[in-house]
Length: 275
Ligand code: LIP
View (tube, protein in one colour):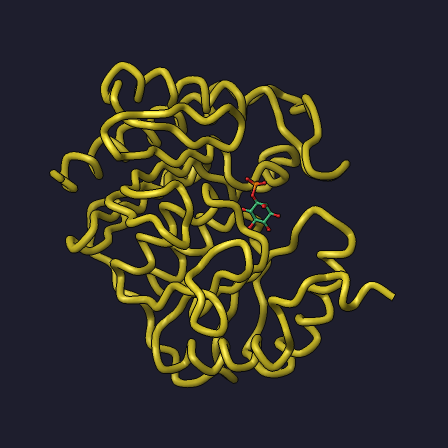
């Protein structure tokens, strides 16, 4: 696999879709539809960005499969799957909060974070044009310069990113976990786009990150960027990163966060607490 060529293609696709999103943002963005809940929006631009990405991949890599947030899965014969988030941070895009990105990754194996091997990826931050890239075994970059994960002294002085799901029960459980985490860290940042959060861990802007409920397209590219920058990227109780929990950060401090989240049952099914 020429992972450098795959990384360069991921960058080109993410930046092209990012230009579309930036240059064609309407004065007033409206919700085109809702998905998993009334507050889980999709906009016309989410769909347009994904259509562009799919068209380019079909033209340049016709044998590859596609797994995208807004469209149907496309099967392939090459064994490679492109994992697409056309706008990660859609609520931020909707309100004009400047933290949303196009995320493009390519993986080999089953299109499942627990079993795939990520080969290359790019996260392009639309508003400020920051672009993080990574290729397996080749390290991670931001705007063409190598990045390394920060080395926080301890959990108590760590700046931690996190996020919340779209379902009320999920949020109630995440709020409960937050009451256990907040007293134990420097502070929390809820920036609203997991792909960017993971890349901010990669370049040391955030010390740690955790979130329950991520979809494959939220973590595919950002997770590789963080891992190639030297971060641990995984779940709880030895599980891989995925919907159950995604945690990222430098060892040994990230291990203290993992322990805290395990003690707080942060990966427990919400029903356990819905009373
Ligand atoms: C978002 C994630 C974010 C999470 C939101 C949502 P979307 O993805 O990036 O971290 O907190 O609930 O899942 O829906 O904007 O692609």
